[in-house]
Image 1 (spheres, rainbow, N blue to C red):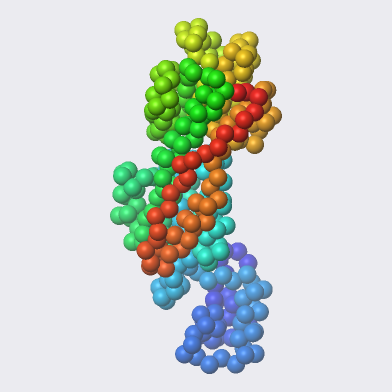
Image 2 (cartoon, rainbow, N blue to C red):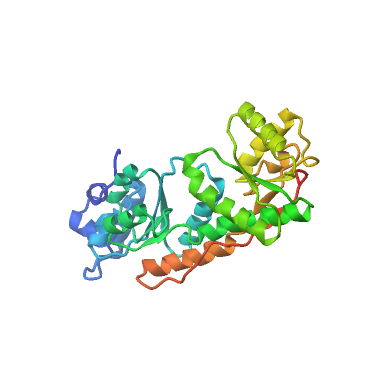
Length: 323
């Protein structure tokens, strides 16, 4: 059988009327159905793989169990940290009887999601952004930030980078920003956190470099940076992927890491320990956040007021050979 299995299909399979099947599938308390008939309907539904149609259930007064997450501007789940948070959140929401659906893509791709009937919508856009305001207009259910406290989460990792390099005796720092324009807002948060922390610690004003993703170009850029600023002895990368490019460029330019310059990334990428030298990085524990956030979302889905939950602003350094 192709397409969605309907109650009509179940009625045909069970050899019963559509009305009887509807009473059983909807567990209608106003109808008295013999137990043998009820089991006959349920067995037919099981054989056909019948599942209730969400929007129709809502029209009958049932409560939605769907949490819809929209991430406008994100075409692919390339950010494994964000993907990890979403995966953990989906598992945590199931404990509250909710089901998470993640819609990747641009604002134009939201049309497919408009046919869904969620209890809550989560958006990667912040509350002050136009995309967030548009969602509040398009959906009649609560719209919440998917990553509340994101600026503190991003900035906290950058602060820990600076602190770690200072502990390693590095006093003049550079920041390697990613070349992608879509990452500029989050990159700017990390850059400002590095500048502020360096100032607080009495360090020189950091040097900023937008590092090319091309290995040859990145090698030339790193060589030029250290020639122009020979005092730089530590480098904070936007994330581990940028840090991998730094390590490759340093290798090609004959720059000793960590002898000449220490390098540290962010996110604790699974391949970090395989880099040469093994990459030092920053890691944030989001376990408590996910548990508390899932509980808050579940409260909102029930029509209650959810508590304020923020991503952690503290992080820890994972020290390896590159620093």
